[in-house]
Image (tube, rainbow, N blue to C red; front, top):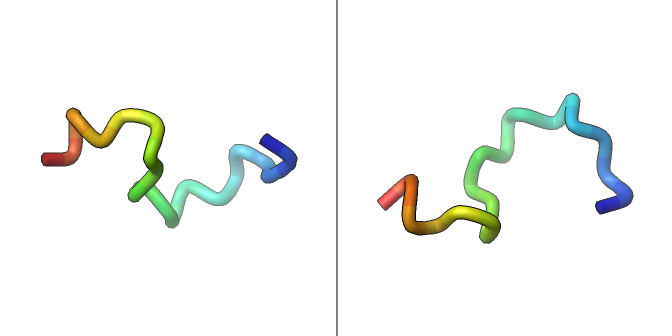
Length: 21
């Protein structure tokens, strides 16, 4: 992940799609 963790605006990550379902 080259993107900083400050970009919390995009919570639609494919990391835990089972959570935001």
